[in-house]
Length: 182
Image (cartoon, rainbow, N blue to C red; front, side, top):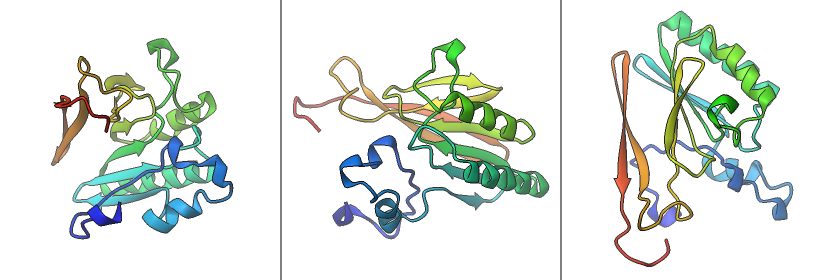
């Protein structure tokens, strides 16, 4: 990956469930942090706060819950809108979303975000691209991998634009051009 790394472009990262290599027990999160930095963090851009959570083990640890509540409280005080990025999306069993955060973490996340202005949640983990609404927050789940990319099913990524107090999300489809595996 380092041969393609452009230091002039900011990269924002999250560990996924495949970032945990159980054969190399004890390496995660040290290995991930060595190359990418903290596994959860935030960045502020104008009136927006982009919050990146580490849910690679399908739950939201207590330390991150406290940290998230504090960061969202800051947003409210500073008049910022928040966007949350997480590997595992919140559970919404009534909508068929069960391959997700655990129920306990989903409930805790609901309690935390209920008092704050969260414009959207972006997630992965499910190996499909789709949207749903959870606790009145749009959730955008995206997958871009060869397991879900077939000749009949294009892969997708999301083009996200933020401007002032609005967020716009557009799906961009990518069609295979050859039979070779990625």
